[in-house]
Image (cartoon, rainbow, N blue to C red; front, side):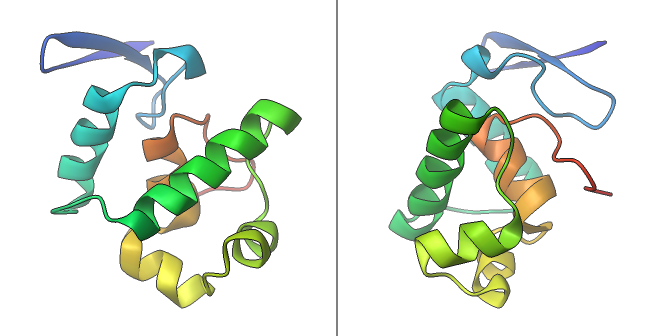
Length: 105
């Protein structure tokens, strides 16, 4: 288990840099991942996806399949990749504080 310290906060992460404890998610985590993802600003579109991912995870205990993400947010897969360059699993789920999705490479 590794630790990342950013802006005075310490986060426990897995070998791929995903939070180990969803409850540790906070604005500093978003800033850290945003920076590592090369995203300059969190827009309303980013936030809509992050909110959906977190709500889905809280209700179901897993990250949604991409098809469910697209259907419920209205964003096509191409748009999700434009917002999160490393993709819905690696970028969006990581920023939302979710564990690494099953099948995410």
